[in-house]
Length: 349
DNA sequence: GCGATCAGCT
DNA sequence: CACAGCTGATCGC
Image 1 (cartoon, rainbow, N blue to C red):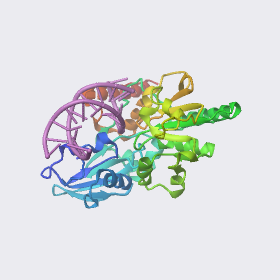
Image 2 (image 1 turned 60 degrees about the vertical axis):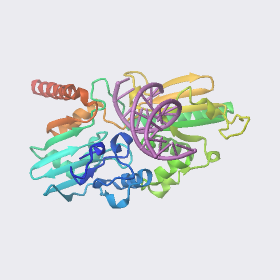
Image 3 (image 1 turned 90 degrees about the vertical axis):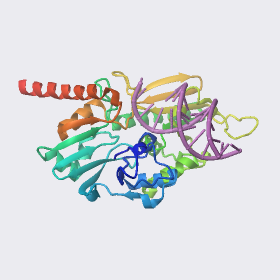
């Protein structure tokens, strides 16, 4: 049972698998969990314990790229965790039972070089026949979802941030940079900007606790501060990066009766794959008075061309979509149609 | 007044 | 609309 905790029951199975710590995947886990062992990565296990109150005895963290054997329903199952290139701690599960192999990607952003650097996955890509079942993150399973690489999206965001800071310096403006993020996810974009600008990153104490649970190297954790005065680069929830929620950030947010203006301009960065328009520049910008919002098409899900490369590489016998399951058949048809068109083109060419 | 659950919103 | 939540209303205690 992968990411299916709302269906959990002690009679069903004792082995549960959690791909990553996002609420739509861990739903069903709470502090009273007692249905069996939850296997996951170490960062995910830390968060399930600290944020959801599950006892460590129920949590079984596993390392990456190292096959382990778990007894399930009287049969030995070999399982390998592979980095999913999604949020911190996110993994894919490769299950092998006898001759049968199943890959559940959880949520993932396919990256050919990164993923084939995992020995078990590279071995799988070289075998023939390869994979029986592929449980696929079909979030962007449509031709219209072509996204820039994460590298290019981050590069664009860094350039915009540098330009904003230089402009503010010339104008002697007090500038606040805001970066939207989920509970976990979207860290690379604000860490890259902070590194380039030589700034610390302000996070509130709750977010600091979460990020401190991710087993980061200490130099990366040391880029963070929980004191607002120590940085003008702040991380806030994604829902605050809009014209309605940003005005309060111009002012002192304390409970003081008379708010004191602290900044002349607030510039928010909104990292989301949904904002992307084909053609034109990578980042789109909206301005109103002292507020600016830069939408950055930075995604932690695979774009459509990446999904095609994934299935061409792994050649699964069967694909099972895990996102917007109501249109699952159309999603598979679309993938297969593109694969077939490409194969025909190659043959004719 | 508290937590759990759910509709509504972004 | 999707994702990954957050806010506010309602319910049970």
